[in-house]
Image 1 (cartoon, rainbow, N blue to C red):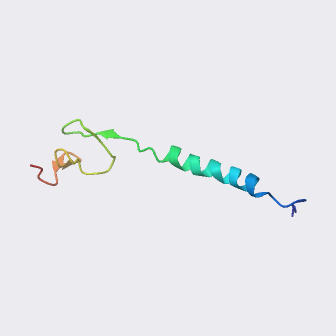
Image 2: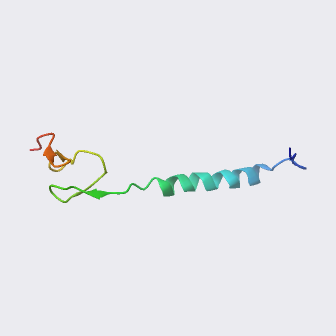
Image 3: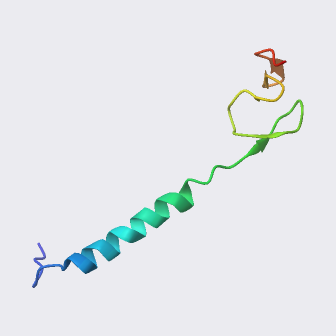
Length: 63
């Protein structure tokens, strides 16, 4: 098994961790789908908050 020759400095360790931090935010942008009833952009596999439909049928009534 490989053994490091020298201790990793705090700067180098934090630089490596910073990449993980920024990648987390880049991946968290949600993809939006279109509601089949009203055409609004919504999160996939969710009830539409604008018209209350899910998979072509009314699940909740929206005033």
